[in-house]
Length: 187
Image (cartoon, rainbow, N blue to C red; front, side):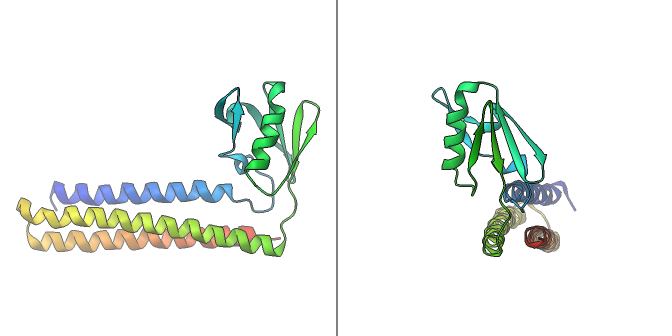
């Protein structure tokens, strides 16, 4: 196999690996019943007129499995943090306790667990679409290899390997989903 063919396969692997990494980050944001600082990833506060990640303006800790403690570095922004968490619609309400905000993570109901499983499936489907798009983009490049004096047999072999790589990454998505669903549905 020549360098062009290998480069196409490497590009496909990298693109698909990036999609899987993004999926894992997105699924980490979906809570499974216990407190996790990652639940607040993506929450942006208005820090003196500048949208800022919550983690950039406060310490976020989990003293136990059911609560999250947010200790802002600037005590004047507690109201902005409270508002940002409420606006993010994460399913819990922060409680103001002096210099900190405490979030008590409520136990998940069966209905909420099913909703979280559905949203996990949506994320996995988005990842599969990204994987298939990566395959399509690389397949277009592989078909152009014929014009660059690559033998047709090798092009067919690269297409088969590309499909095998795609199938492996799609199977990885399904394994990740099964694991997340088990985590969510475990009481």
